[in-house]
Length: 224
Image (cartoon, rainbow, N blue to C red; front, side):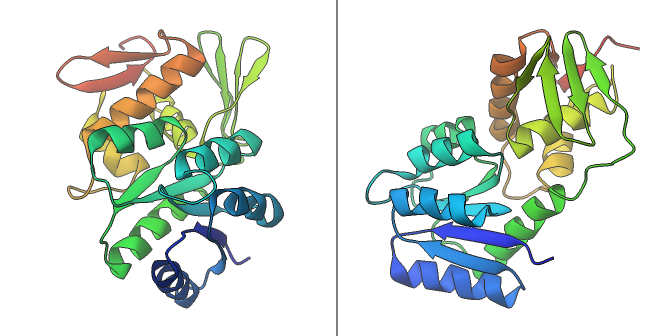
């Protein structure tokens, strides 16, 4: 089945170039030119991935990301001309999974898209429920509960928690998590990305689920 991508970009030349490249890669691509149109297009198409510019007419990419993620978990790749860390952190906190700063090469964009979409195919139907205190993680259905309440996680938040839960007690470095969850192998990634997603998980699941091992990385569960 062809994977669906929505591109929300108000600059026609960039939108056309991105769409043409992704269609050449075999994806089904739809394009919107403003914030409200992007949200509505995502409702209609239910894409596997959204490529989202931050500066948009109507309302900005942050609000698009917030609304889209509130309705259904979906992978989000931000396009931004602003490489300041604060802008990127805000986007990640709102549920974005990755980012590319303008100008970018078509090859880089294609690689980032492929890496994100591969992550969506990793769920193991046979995987058993994992319990982390009062948190339950169901890999097969990609659901998380805290107590009796279901918790909404973005795809990347779920993948990060799953990666840590796969080795309870083991400490994984930020660099290892970047490689395993984001498919970044020594280039393009920043460990702040991991920290931001861990902070988001703690806000949703409580501070006790993921522990920090200073100078090393993160872990779940007690040390073995």
